[in-house]
Length: 253
Picture 1 (cartoon, one colour):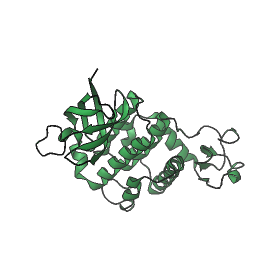
Picture 2: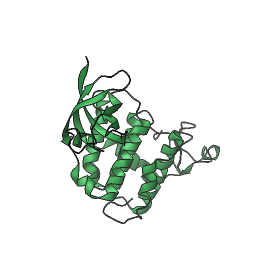
Picture 3: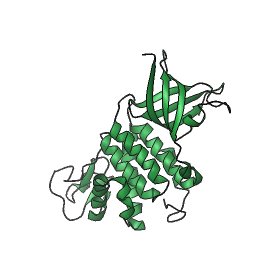
Picture 4: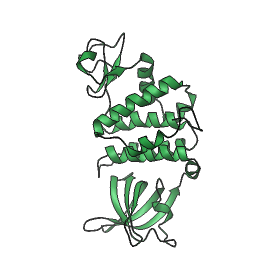
């Protein structure tokens, strides 16, 4: 078929000249895709709204020889309240960059698509910092990068006593195995249980949690190092979020 339909979230949009935009989207039907939106940057373009960053839209796609293009676009959700807060926009950018970095092209994952939509909605109204942490571990798990949390990832013994977390090892370590991994950091039992809870709970339940600043900072550090280890680089949006001081603003860091 020359034409096909999909439902997607816009992860990245880049101007290409002649009012065209090159998009990276994550769709329910086909996973991550690159698409061209010809003329979408023109003020009068009917596609203009549907191709905005973070927009949740329905698209009619025209197959091309090298790159498919958007023929029509219809907005489902724009997450308008999210766009009114610079810090929340930063977290949404982080979510989008994380998906773009880890998700393979052309591999559909409807459950992951639903997680993205749900998380964008919650970023607009809930504790954005905890929403982002929960998204990190859920996304990594759904995309095949789940850290080992149940036993020592090196010797496979039950976890007890002092615990450590190592990106190089792939998860939690016992005290005996910690010397083998220079990158290992202290990981309390409470932090470990919080990560497991993020995996079990639906994101909407996060409003029930009360996590103090030291635990938030440690969780952010551990997950950030785990992500950097697998990407071999730091996400630009993570650097941007450091501009917001701990505990400041509506959402924290």
